[in-house]
Amino acid sequence: MNTSFKNWTAEEKTAFAASKNTEFLERNPGEVLEYFLKEFPGKAALSSSLSYEDQVLTDMMVGIRKDARIFTLDTGRQFPETYELIDRTNMQYGISIEVFFPDFRKVQEMVREHGINLFYDSVELRHKCCEIRKIEPLKRALQGVDVWISGLRRSQSVTRAGMQMVEYDTADDVLKLNPLILWSEEQVKQYVKENGVPYNRLHEKGFPSIGCQPCTRAVAPGDDIRSGRWWWEDPDHRECGLHVRH
Image (cartoon, rainbow, N blue to C red; front, top):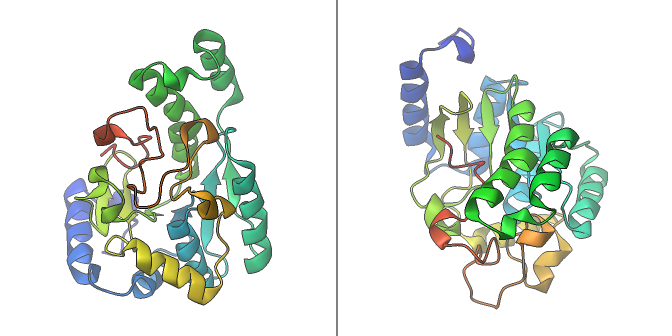
């Protein structure tokens, strides 16, 4: 197909994703990234939460293309250690991670109506907070993007067990690329160690998964890696909505 991805039909996009998933599912993540960064120049972007996984992908992508696009969403409720990691990552790789913020007017309206910590009151209000602080900024960040690169892994949680390496995301009209989908937590940490990849210092304090400060807590050794996220909710819907909308 030599036309722009956005001009393909939904059937063509779905078929392409299925074909590439079959082709690349068992391949090395670096090879997968190299293919998509080459085939979609300037149209592939990593949405980074600064997790172990996203830091691994950052290291791989910068090694393939120094100008590879990487962005993060600043909800305004992040840990200080997360902001510090953005600076360390930029300095180590000589890059500038793009930062997208929520619409302050929508945040102000939400807080006035429901309070500063509304997410503790109900699942619906927590989803509303995630919608305003994460999903709306993501939509802006994905404008002009054909391939959305993510650090999702199947073993991270029950909500991710059925995800593929390459999928067509109908909600955002993009190819969703998860190069580490089959990797284990051990493989990710080993890559970080062997390649000197910068990581969040909270990982050394019992935080295997890190999101917004009020919605993340440390967990005991051996606990599920996502159990510290939205711990007051049922595990079957502990997602912010970024990755479960299609």
